[in-house]
Image (cartoon, rainbow, N blue to C red):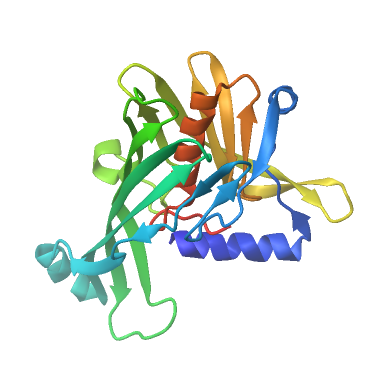
Length: 273
């Protein structure tokens, strides 16, 4: 379902001759420095004076399975030519790499896991494209990473966690067209300091003629990193840039770089810009 949305979005963007860009708030832009991430989403990244080692990836597996059988429901639905079945898809991946600024090094160990449960309705004895319909029932995505090391021998271990959770039953959602939201929410903490992570979406676009257009839906464009004192960084997924607040010290910038590269290295929940 997510893939279908991306295809429709891409078709609309090409047809409308739009240029998509993340809208960085002007007040933050004036107090921040942008660094482009070379090799983002690949197996090695670099930006400014930060470089990663080759990203070592474990097996990235995706395997479907049967969910609820709906035996009683099917006894009724078959009388009107319909069938009902449940499916569960599991996907997981892990990776490990080192991040260095030329003086200090950190090791990042990360793991992703997603479980998707759907109900499929099908028209019996019908092989046409419109012979079936899927309804999302539940989606659980968890991304976790441990960051060891930093700019000081006493640097604490940081733990990064991002989640995206949907449960039709728990939310009492009656919308049969519910879909998996693109952005994940999360935080990173070392036990005393915390960095909050929230998704950023865009709806306004820049047309080929320079004018502003509006999409009929929002698209995930990046992530905002903040502390209790305000925004400290923005990860731009579209142009693959990271905006660093100018007042960050060396250790804070190192920590942000570790978090940003971990977000860009994901494969299970990769936005595929």
